[in-house]
Image 1 (tube, rainbow, N blue to C red):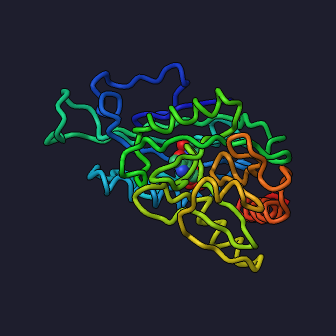
Image 2: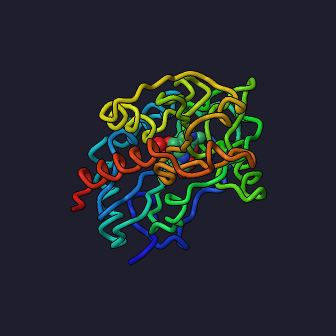
Length: 285
Ligand code: PDD
């Protein structure tokens, strides 16, 4: 019971995991991934995660060799065999193994690996809120694909960590695109502002569920429009959305408090709406 891995149809101890040295994911970052949370022994939002996985695969012309029922079954097997009630499942599909050459090999079999781990998240942050650091967005131009190439994200997150911030928000052409592993939303005069869906951000599953299933019930408007970091610093409230991050209040941006530096009432309502979604879908009381 505990963290486990999956490779080639087998569930294995994580230490046993072996990947081919010439796997294209390892050598080129030639692959895609997803990450879904498990609450009460059930996968949350699995369908939209797998739909996005198929889209990422299509965009990179990697054949989708697993059907949705198969993907669902492997997730359930990992949960059952690990005994993990609350955790996260990471999955990645690389183009597969072939002698190293940049262009796609003629024949290659995609390689699926997965891991499940218990949650290890400091829940007090959802209460107190966190600081974020503005950094340049140094990523490539297909941030809509959830690809394994995450160096821009990794370097941004490291800068945030060194500045004792939870997350970095990234700036491209003077506008805030998103966090390194989350989407970024601000509230100004009861309007939610967030970067529009395009090639420059990942269309977060959490972002979509918040905008489509929670915000309409709160009577708030949404504006999918780019804004500067200066504008964000003058917001009434700000928060991050993401599978791990859930709804994370942002109380300072690059050291400047957002409004009075306390978690705002709209963010609290959205946190509550998100909790309710999880409870409904994962059978919590
Ligand atoms: N990251 N933007 C980026 C760049 C991300 O990496 C993520 C998710 C999100 C939020 O997407 P979602 O709501 O679907 O989790 C936005 C995952 C959790 C990760 O890298 O582990």
